[in-house]
Image 1 (cartoon, rainbow over the protein chains, first blue to last red):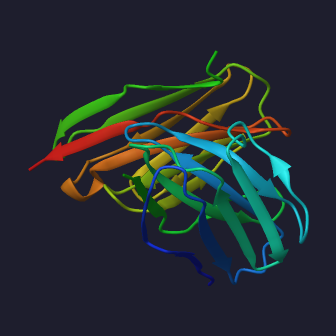
Image 2: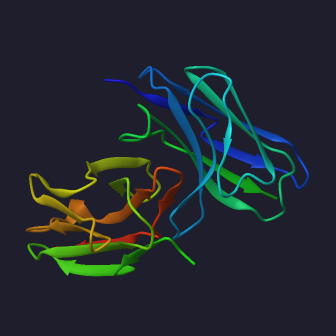
Amino acid sequence: GGIITQTPKFLIGQEGQKLTLKCQQNFNHDTMYWYRQDSGKGLRLIYYSITENDLQKGDLSEGYDASREKKSSFSLTVTSAQKNEMAVFLCASSIARDTQYFGPGTRLLVL
Amino acid sequence: GQQVQQSPASLVLQEGENAELQCNFSTSLNSMQWFYQRPGGSLVSLFYNPSGTKQSGRLTSTTVIKERRSSLHISSSQTTDSGTYLCAMDDNNRIFFGDGTQLVVKP
């Protein structure tokens, strides 16, 4: 079996700050995803990547940058944190577009 | 409009009762996946079910492509089944999640 790790687990930022979230997987999966989940809502896709150095925009890419430095890692940057923003960011990976496996999430709070 | 509609939004059961969760989608389907999320927890994949019926223990997933719907049936519910159930569909171009069904099973 494999595992997806996300760091940090909790992230508290200030308005306007640039914040970076990291995700690592050891499944050797080609495709990785970043989702945002707001309280009581489903997930919305921010970015995904089908291979190293590839980036594809999702529905919610505005305000975010992503980077797939190597096959096992996918990072997400909040370019300018919005005041009172609170959400969970979930990273996932899959073989092609098959079953997705998720990390534990990073909880963001912007003061 | 929203591509994936889940119902009900919330459900309260007595332990031992059955539950039927629905997911309806408005576009053509390539794949359908059901997830379980504990409060504050990460998502666990329950089924990858693009069509037909799959069963795992007390859980059964049925996807009917022509009718653009997928269901998750939980039989003999237990308190440990409490949490959020999410469906996600992929039209081979984009991935869409429903808003989830919040399930509470009381002892």
